[in-house]
Amino acid sequence: MSRVERRQLISLGRRSGDPYTALRFQAVARLGAGRTMRQAAAELDIAVSTVVSAANRFVAEGVGGLYDRRRDNGAVKADERFDRVLTRLLGLTPEHYGWPRPTWTRELLCLQMQVEGFPMVAVCTMGRALSRIGARLGSPKPIVLCPWRRERRERVLAAIRRLEARASAEEPVLYGDEVDIHLNPKIGRDWMLRGHQRRIVTPGKNQKFYLAGALDVRTGRLHVTGASSKNAALFCQLLWLLASRYRRARCVHLVVDNYGIHKAHATRKALAALGGRVVLHFLPPYCPDANRIERVWQDLHANVTRNHRCKNMTRLLDNVRCYVDGYRWKRALRQSEHRRAA
Image (cartoon, rainbow, N blue to C red; front, side, top):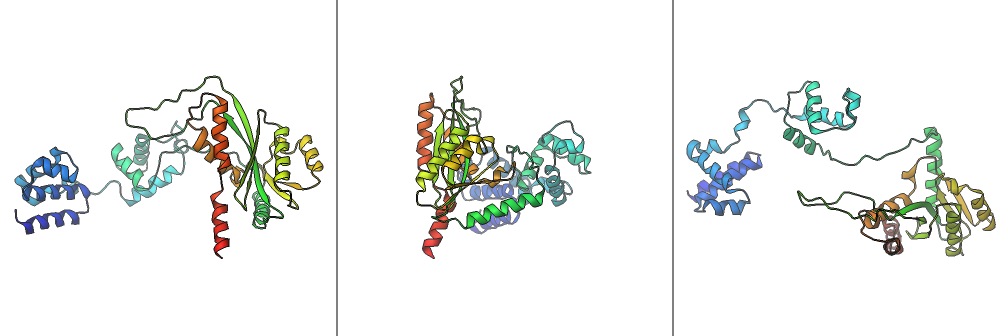
């Protein structure tokens, strides 16, 4: 096969718009250049059987035999309208459509698409359609709806955002919250080889430790204290820590949720003893996404506690302290860099 013929084959394969068709054209072109079956397969990173099949089809049918034989099967089943309806289905659960199952599977999506008036498609076709629309298999997020009216909730959140925008060294703004540290590891998703499931040996008898932290929105610094009990004493410990860390500040603004220890009698006594140097600002109920430190705890779990292999609490807390001491909020660091550049 001449060089011109080989280049024409490669060009036809590329214009087909199908990567598998293009591979068949490439395989035949390499065979025409004198490569063996194994050499062509190695260069294209495909199976030798694929090269053999392409060669046989080319010998039997010529160039036409290299094209996808499914192109004359009729109209495409999973077209743009199919994708739009599939996207709408994923916005709801199977129960909304009368199925006695709370989660979607590819098989169930095939059945529901048939109910929607489309031809029955294979599970592999449904998988390609899901990939095409950018769908993913993930873990849902449990939430509790805020009981406040939307206007009231947005008004409070806007006031907190304005407070955050005015943060300064004299009046720093921090977000505070508590987090549980369990000796029994949180189990999370991880990359594993096919056929191999990673095993995490747990101590069996769980132990708990609690951290109370505050994230400075201006500097990105994280202030943390801990105790073996999650009570008002732990939160008061955090208040005194902030008062000592911000001695020169006129007032420290601490944004917290409505957890009981933040409003306890011991907390009110500690705030009075601090003489108004620390002021609490409460978020609307059940609005964890508005508390910036929640993302810090997510990062802590992702980097330290999830799937951990520490055999005792001492070792685990050493890892936690190492991570907390080196933590800096990236958003605050970027803002600081922009201010210096300006």
